[in-house]
Length: 339
Image (tube, rainbow, N blue to C red):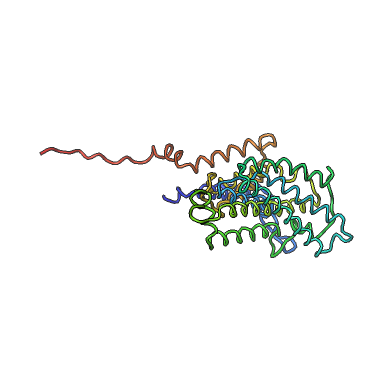
């Protein structure tokens, strides 16, 4: 049973099991209303879109041996910039102006990622410290942009980023899937993925081999910032407002967890895009399931922690060997007969 040794077997098995539970516990698991798909399954994939985008950027950063703790703050800044600019529009339903503002917000988020990359690759600050600076300062910057208030907007084109449907599927999920497909093609169909793993595996060796490790490190932080900004727009568009305090709060921890569940090594040198997608879907499904089965709100986090610990143990080769190795049949010992 070699498939049991695959790192993605248990995450997929638990994901499928939780979806089956939702089939029996949810009022409508999957149905069609007004030509669109609705139900618990659609809620899961739409709700997982922001986490999927953040975890995607986190995967690239971790593959180079770094980490990005500032993604939640970048999400808050992105939503704050977008809502502040949309609020000043004479016509908030002008599609062209809203698209331009969306591009500006993503550009600001990419610049914040460039700031992180510069601190890590040029200044030489440890990634956890460099991004911790923006994690703290960024939340304050978002509150300065919104003047400590929640900015509400009434823009239908902006809201459609999170609540719209295209080809019967949520627009937010399609955006996340497009980002996943683009990243997978660039990292697995070109030499970029090999360069990322080379930089994460041994930065010194990669520099000696002629790889521009500094430029690649800065690039992954820029991409992480841009994806976090896009996720912040989805969260902001969903509630039609900018909440600089709660937007993206602690999402960096869920993103790191999704990356680990997907099989990416935290020390760098190995990453899995599809594993990260499965990890993000699993976390979102777990969030929906604990509510659906009636777990008390006070015990929700503890229940999630137990499931995650069990999942991490099931992925550990050492744990599997100690638990299941006892049940393996021992090889027969041949008795040697002397002549």
